[in-house]
Amino acid sequence: MKKMKGFTLIELIVVISLMSIFLLIAIPKIGFYIRFNEHQQIRQIKKDILYAKTQAIVKGNIHKFSYDAINNSYSIQENATVIKRVYLKNGLEFSYKGSGTEITFSRTGAPSNGDTINLHNKNKKKYKITITPVVGKVNIKEIK
Image (tube, rainbow, N blue to C red; front, top):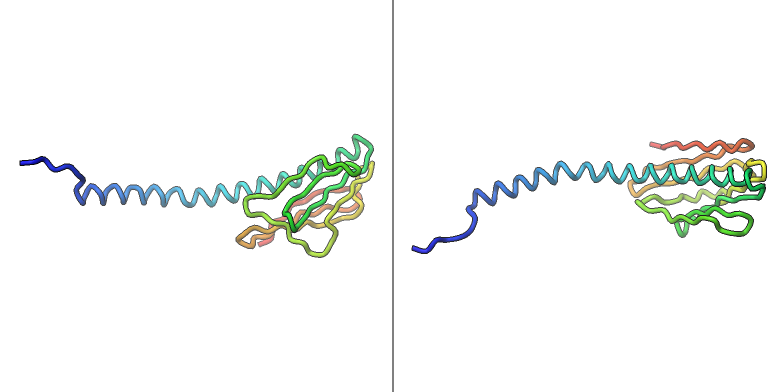
């Protein structure tokens, strides 16, 4: 009699059930990873705004932080030269609300005016980055 090779139905069911359990454990962690990347990118925007402010003080030149809602990017400029340009990833997008898209820091580090930068993700979760006038303090607020 020939020896048959293959898997029994019970072996297949056990393997499929174990794989589904592993996937159920991994799927919520993917959501955590996406949220973590969003928060990391928002903190990076805050750091870049503060970098533009600090460079304006240190170098004694006017620096600008400007964002582009159409291309979903922002840039830091010294006079007319772009120092840094970043394109947002991970589903974050700028929401243009009609206010200016540019924050200018004078030689003293004071912003030209206070402004609010609005961001949202694919799940319509909203974030506000607020720059206070005169002192240039940067605050991040998550809107629920």
